[in-house]
Image (tube, rainbow, N blue to C red):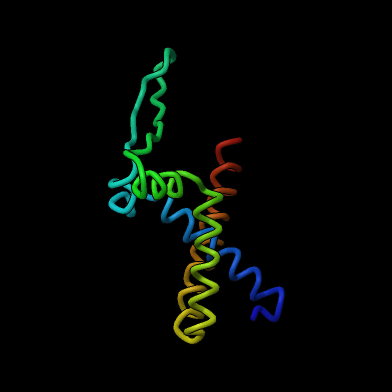
Length: 119
């Protein structure tokens, strides 16, 4: 059971990082490849835009829908992290703290990048 605001923030940041890892990061492309295709199109102004196409039907399509939806994946990541924490609190405490630190670092990096892009 989450007993403090600090633990809640740790779970939020860990869920954020795990979700981004699964849905967006290149290192986990191998997880998405069986279910999604990335299609690149060049816009009239020369920008390249990447679109996601979900593959096939049935269970593959269901996983494709899940992996293409940040909100859906985030919900299941939260269930996964909290469920494993309930079963193996000592092991998962380490995992959650590492993911939370990485999530906070990514969030801060985004803020710094945005601030430096404005100048």
